[in-house]
Length: 169
Image 1 (cartoon, rainbow, N blue to C red):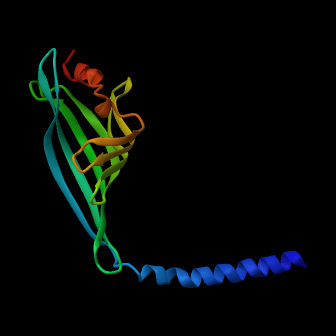
Image 2 (image 1 turned 180 degrees about the horizontal axis):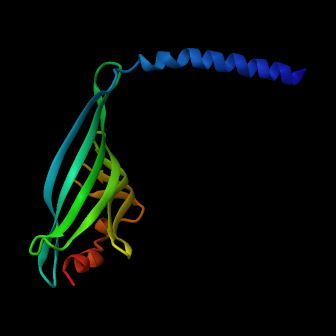
Image 3 (image 1 turned 90 degrees about the horizontal axis):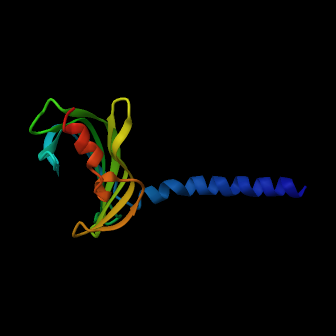
């Protein structure tokens, strides 16, 4: 008998909850969304011994959403970034590595920026990952890292394997 009452009470509670949930959605202005795709060529880092720069030639897709409170005031921007392409030696472009498709979400809140996901992955064929970035990185408004969790060769400055692979045989 008690279990029947409990089930009825839970059922009524769920109905009330589901009835009120859409009301919360009208309390905020729906986010604006923009989708962009483009090719990007950019300098990434410098290697020494031998001296050369690592450049990327990537296809990029950005899905950007602007979020607002119920009064229409901006609260945050979220951007899903997808990259894939090649990273190469600018002195000897025949030395290049495939960048595996990656995805990360970047959130700006007016105070700083947070990156979550897999912003980079470079594999050496037959050897596995040699340059890797994953996890969560939080930057303040001056681009100083205030929090970092997860393996990230870029943040750690571990570019030796990448530079060696792009320097040639």
